[in-house]
Length: 212
Image (cartoon, rainbow, N blue to C red; front, side, top):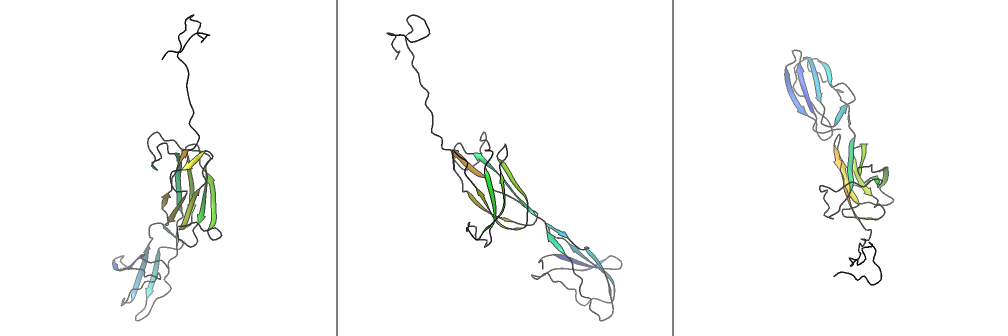
């Protein structure tokens, strides 16, 4: 059952007689209701979609009990997205001028025991994708649950943020998991000589010394 769902009772004149919410097991009830014609209306929780009608017509006899007035709902899928970026200043934050990195592998695992830690042999792979030209990736449709988003470092880079981000996807919401990377390629050297070009040939010839 789904807890916290609002259910409204109206009479034949469409006047609200009572309102209640479902309990932890998804159950609701209206007590001491006089005989008559009624409608019961369910208001979907945010992130849920009904699989049955949201309104039921009830004819309640004197002293009787009307049961089986049930409503079916299903949670909407949630999305997970983010960016892998070149964290030039290695501060773990996307700053102006820091570009995305394309072609990075991102794996989405179901966090089976919901402990926020990747457990090989327990957590199961749900999907894999790679970042696009701007470094962005997306898993657009995921059943609400606990997940682990895992990034594989691209060649020549080292992470400035965690490679594993735990996320909890609620019905209909979107979670963001970004990954920072810094280049590990060795810096290059640029040098040369300023020399006294005595013969103005444009080339350093024998006897043309450097200028300090």
